[in-house]
Length: 174
Image 1 (cartoon, rainbow, N blue to C red):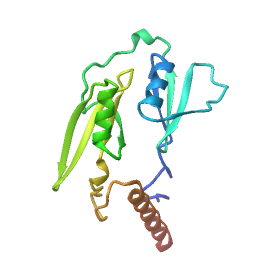
Image 2: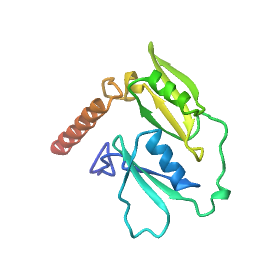
Image 3: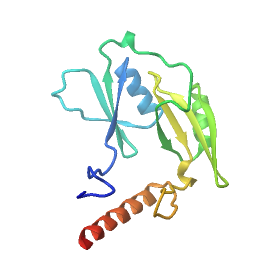
Image 4: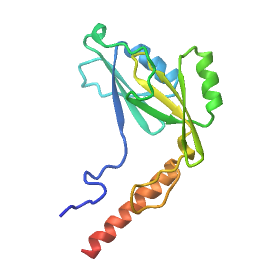
């Protein structure tokens, strides 16, 4: 018998992503000055170079590559590549800032049910893909048994709370 139907590992949230980089300093500069993360304390017991950053409810752990010259360099900005996506308040402001900072990017548009979502894709200094979007207007539609909701954090939290309540009711019934 499954103890937790919709959340078998009892997950709460994404904690961090780890990225291997050629230069911790260059990557820190990008994540702090382009994306708005801030440095946080990193445990002193680590015996390798790195940095921890935090922002927007997620941590980014930068790990210095042992052989930076062997890291592949991605040149083409491909929206179908691995990436992390951030919602923004103003796509126009993001695009203007990227132009000012001379950061190459690719635009994309997603349309679903009359709703249009704009996306901008660009690389960090090591070629890891970053997406900025106005995804908040795109509904999160579960494949079965739920009502369509917005992609916003608040609605996601409400959906998770409802799922937990349903799990508790399921346990009581059994």
